[in-house]
Structures are given as C-alpha cells and as structure tokens.
Amino acid sequence: PGLVCPHYDKVQSNGILRAKDFEKMMLKHTEENALGIDHWAALVVEGERYNVLSLPGKPGSLLPNSNFSPTAEGVPWIWMKRVVNGGTKVSSNPIAKEGLLVDILKEAQNIILDPMEEKCRELNPSK
Image (cartoon, rainbow, N blue to C red; front, side, top):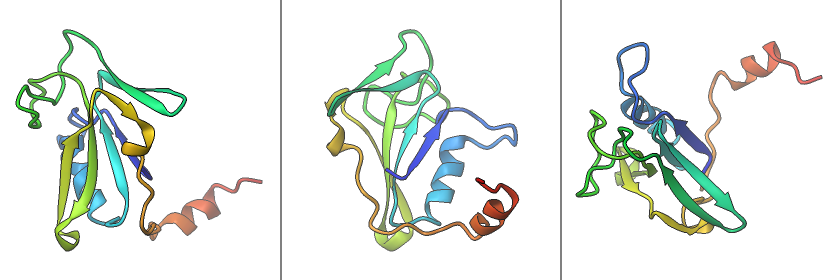
C-alpha cells in the first residue's frame, strides 16, 4: 500500500482516534490502499511472506468476531483499508494471521498528491 497508519488503535493528542482520522485522510486519497497497524502489533516480513505479530496480553482493536474495537478491547492486529462506494466510504478488514505479501500490498490505482507537497519539498530540500 501507499499508506500506513502506525498506532492505529490509539487516541491522538487531539483526542481523536487515529483509526478515524486515518479514514478521513484516506477519503482524500481514494485510489490508494492502506494498512492500519495497532500499537502492539507488527508486520513481520520474510521473503514473499508475512505474519502478524500480536503481543499477548496487550490491548488492540481486533475483537473475536473480527470487528473493530474503537476502545481497544480486543487483540493487537493489522487492518487492510481501501476506499469504496465511489469514494464515500472506507472498508476495513483484518488481514490473515499469515500469508503472501502480494495479498496485502496492493498497488495504488492512482496517487493523489497532497496540495502541500510542493511547499514541503521547498522547505526541506534533499540536496
């Protein structure tokens, strides 16, 4: 994916759940795919395969019924995100415990540049 949200299950300093803020941002990048990674989860990559590392006993967003818990009442996990319904809604699904990277890392259909990108490049020259 082009977008990744770490600490996906945490509340930011502004009081907003990162998962909600990330979905709002994704609606501005409607043809991107993304992953949301809970605070106590990690994506472990070995060659062409991956597995989800979920620390036992730590809070996370995956409930036993595979739904999202906004109050971190589940286990730490990783979510696959994509914009659907003509750019009006974000779908969110937990990834499998293990699998092939090609199943979760999907190429963007189109990359929409942030309007502030040029200004950031100006203020942070690479040379």
